[in-house]
Image 1: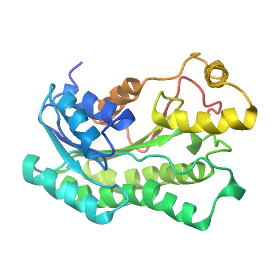
Image 2: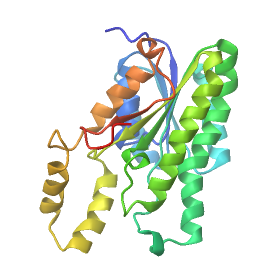
Image 3: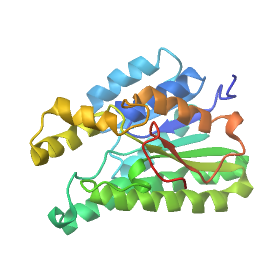
Image 4: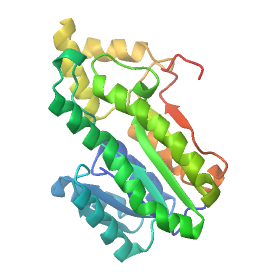
Length: 261
């Protein structure tokens, strides 16, 4: 299937590894010119080299929690590639802690790193999308938006808010030919899984092997997902083939979310 993405310009946040990198790779493989950012220049360069085997790539060192960094990344992208057609927002998760263990400072840092970067990046790309009457905005988020997890208190709160933001953005931007969707990741094999495992094995007094065995047993497909499987869904949502799909918070979770809505 031709996704109709050849020559499109995509910005993918926090794309030096994990889910962001998988999305950038999938978009590059479909013909996009891809701009990626990360705080870590070394891992960013390694990711850029891998992505460049499929197409043009721009690497910019940026902290998604910094408005100035995001503005700089956007400007450098436009200078090299032209106006942005596709935005994939993405961040690392807030602290892995239960409610009473969290300070005001951690809550505020979570808002900055998980919510405000999405708001700021979207504001940067939307005006030119409106002028051209075409755009795709895709928020990488989590199943905790629909099925909260005790150890992910801040994330569960803010990801639910991102689903609300996704819907309101879709409502407001639809007349301009811009679709806005969110991808709710399930248990995907990333560094984030290791951080959660560290908490669970300590609390429950089990081994890492037992933790991951139990985790897989809860998933109808009986395995954790691979970043590639998320990236390919994102590429579809960014494509011409998904032109009538907007305002959706789409689980990519192997069936883990139990609710029907």
